[in-house]
Image 1 (cartoon, rainbow, N blue to C red):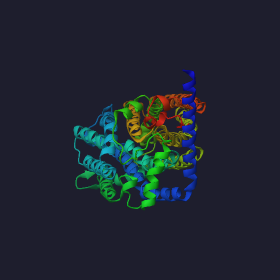
Image 2 (image 1 turned 30 degrees about the vertical axis):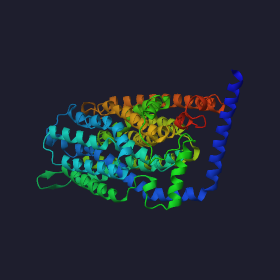
Image 3 (image 1 turned 90 degrees about the vertical axis):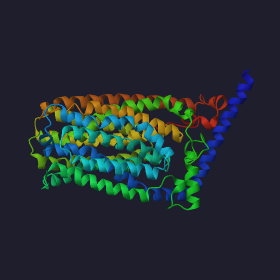
Image 4 (image 1 turned 45 degrees about the vertical axis):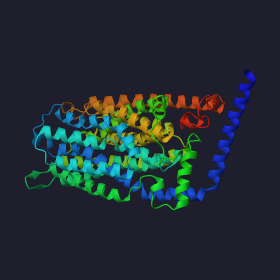
Length: 491
C-alpha cells in the first residue's frame, strides 16, 4: 500500500510544479497587457466605486451632523438613548441583507443591481428631511439600512471580478478612502446646509434634502457606465476581454476553470466558505475594529463639540482628522499591495488608534485631545480596507468569496449594536465610556490579528512542505478553491 501512495504523492507534486510554472510563464509574457487592463479598469470602475462609498458613508453618517443642527429638538427626541436607537436600527437590515445581496449580485447584472441600491437609498435619505416625528425617522433609517446593506460586500465581490488578488487591496483602499473623505466633505457641507431656513424646513432637513438628491443623480448616472463583468465591458477589445477572464482563473492557482460569467451557485462552495478558519478570524477582527470606526464616524462632531466648540465650528473641525484618515488609507493601501501583506498594516493601525484613544482619555487639554482624533482616524480607517482585502485574498473561487465576504461583513457589522450606544449624551463632554470601550476593542483587534497571522503562516508552511498535496488525490482538484495545495494565503 505504501508504494502506490508514494507514486500518487509524487504525481501531485508534479501537477503543482507544472501549474506554477505555467502560471509564471503566462504572467511574464503579458506584462504590458496586464498594465493596460488595470489602467482601463482603474479608469472605468474605480471612480464609480469611490462615489458609491462616499455617498454611502455621507448618507448614513449625516444624522450626526443633523444632531448638531437641531434634529433632536425639532423631532422631540429626548436626551437619553432615543437618538442612539435611531442610529442602531439602520444596522438591523444592513446586517441581514449582506449574504443574500452578494448572491443576488452574482445572479443579477452587477451594473444594474448596485446602481439600483444607490438610487433607492438616495431617495430614502431625501425623505428623512421631510420627517416630522421620531417614528418616521426610525422607519427611514430602517429603509436606509436595507438598501445600503449590500453595498460593501457587493463592491468587494465586484472588484474581485476584475482585479487579481494582490492588486485588490490598493483598489479597495482607493474606494474606501471615500469613508474618511465623506466625514470631511460631509462636515463642510453640513456647516453650510445647516444654516438654510426656507419653506418651513429649518436647518437640519436641508442636509438630507441636498445630500440625498445628489446621491439619486449619481445612482442614475451609474446605470449607464458600470460594466457587469469583464466579458461585458464595452471598453475592452477581444484580446483584453479574453485575458481578463484567463488571468482570474490563474489567480485562483488553477483551482477552477470556470469564468466568473458562467459560475453557478453550488452548495459545495457555500460549505467551503463556512469551513474556512480565516473567514472567522477576519469576522472577529473586523467586529472589534468596527466598534471604534462606526462610533468615531457617527460621533466625531459630538466629541469635538464636547471640547467646547459651537455647532458650526465643531462641524468644520471634523474636516482635518478625516482628511488625515483619507491620506493614510491611500498610502497604506499602496504599500500593502507592494509588500503583499495585510496583517502588519492592521497591527500598525490598531497601535496608532490605541495611542489616539489614550490621548482622548488621559488629557484635559483640547489640543492633545484633538490631536488624538487624528491618530484614531489614521489608525482605524486604514485597517478596514486591509480586512476587506484580507478576506477576499484568502477565499477562492468567486462564489466562496461572495458567501464568505457576506458572512464576514454580517458578523462584523453586529458591532454596531455596541458602537451606536457607547457615546451617550449623559457622558458628555468627555465621553469616557465610549473612548474606553473603543480602546479595549482595538486591543482585541490587535490580539486577533496576530493570531490570524500565526495561523496563516502555519498553513502556508504545511503547503510548502507538501503536507496538503494529498488533497489532489482525495478530492476533485477543480473544486479545491483556496484549499488547493498551490494556493498560498496572504499574510
